[in-house]
Amino acid sequence: MRIFFSLVIFVSTQAFAFNVDKVAIVIDDIGWRATDKTALNLPKQVTFSVLPHTPFGRSLAEQSNKQNREVLLHVPMESINNRTLGPGALTSNMAEESVHQVLAASIADIPHVIGINNHMGSKLTQMSEPMSWTMNFLKDNDLFFLDSKTSQYSQAEYIAQQVGIPSLHRHIFLDNKIDEQYIEKQFEKLVRSSKKYGNVIAIAHPHPETIKVLQKMIPVLASNNIELVAISQLLPTDHPVRLAQQAKSLPQSSDGESLLE
Image (cartoon, rainbow, N blue to C red):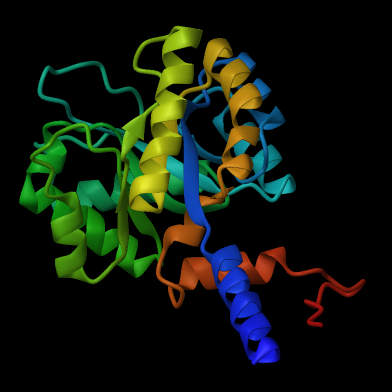
């Protein structure tokens, strides 16, 4: 009986040990400023979302890849308030062919992209046709979509499901207000959300205040039994992107072949 009871305790403890919630943090708007490189000091599990056709975008994507950090393409999309979008933007007056051409050019500019998320896009993500064209392009290129959720009426995830590609969405913005105290409180909210709901995705930006707070607060995750993960770890286990990223993280032999224990 004592042996059986000990075994039950061991199994229960092991089950609890593997019950770890996951948090993914994405740093948007990478590419315009030389100071964006300070984000490279964050743990490699922090994903970068890089703006296309920007002065430092390609270089930072290359440096991210050398760190084994995942890279998204941060695609400017039309907003309700007609904000300036920048290069590589998708707008509501584009035809399907133009949408695909713009996305292809942006991916050619930013290497190592495994998925995309929207920069702004409060208008475009509500429109079924441009979103369908976007999702079809992603499906053809084994990419996924992360909805930044700049509109509560976004159709992006629904359309992604209709097209047959996995999609994720942002749960919390960490630095809508560029103030260290505010960002710390948002990070604490992130921890509470993960403990309550499980896997959570946060989006932030490469502001000096944000980088400082993240360096301070990220260790808090582990002490709360929360794992910081790259964004691909929240995709379905059989998705090509996740499988490719897992293979990439395996130790390599001298001839480049993965080593399996």
